[in-house]
Image 1: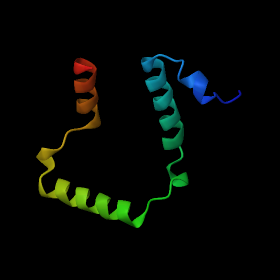
Image 2: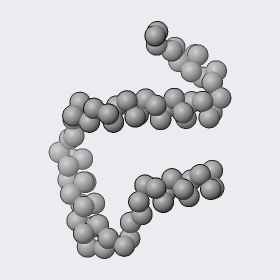
Image 3: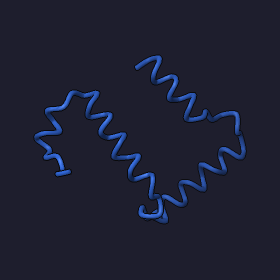
Length: 73
């Protein structure tokens, strides 16, 4: 498969581009070890984990967020 040129991607509808972005992200996420995490990102993750530990009820699952997006999208 040959890579799509940006000009070809921009011809896609917004929905098609979102779907393409999701597919690209899924392919990246399938190999998380290939993405280095910076020290700043590690600190931020630690802060978020600590905030969640302090108040777990303040967060929502990805499924809840996605359902809201689907309803309101």
